[in-house]
Length: 294
Image (cartoon, rainbow, N blue to C red):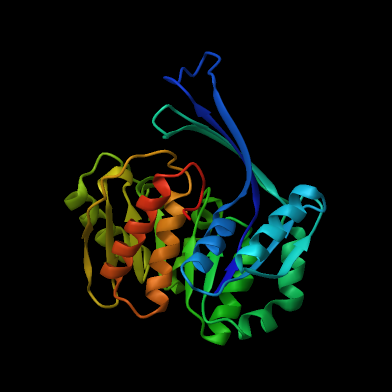
């Protein structure tokens, strides 16, 4: 599986007691390598799916550690290049229940990755079985990857971070095999507030919105309320309830859900089964203070 996206330095603060936004909060701070697609690459190899990561890191100890860490897990890092400002940074505050209370993200400079894909993308794509693409790299990268995937007849599974590219180019979603996002991201795409909806209403909104947007298949996760899904090609749709587990850290659960769902879809599973497997891995990730479950 070809995974194309960014590497981030994750700085997470965990409140030890009730989190008070305007006060000094005692707790723990962790600094680790992260990023949506970096997490997906790690999750995929842990699920037994070979993953080749196309990305950038900084040419410093943190960047080398991020690259070597993925290689040690079994991720193919042949196409992970060192570049100036090649890694982003994500600052996150988690409250006493492990829920995200606030965050700020600094994007990397994607110029080097754009140039690399222009020069090497055709050969890289030819050897892939499928593609995971983080659309929030840049419009240039997204357009290049989507064109190459179409040329080589490779399925694309899209994941987003800040929705910046997708909101400007929603037409990219016409050619994805499946678009997986959360209810807030779906609401931004459909230009309506979906956060107050229950599962049945959310499913109807997803069916309506994905059809209008021309998205072949779509999944919307709803945090502790489960996930809804629709496949406009087969007519399959439904709801998957959540698993009741103790929560240590909510960050990374969405990436875990995506990874397991895509792994199942690549093996030919129906969307309903893929969503169940995504829910199971997300539940495991919620129980650890980190972005990926062991």
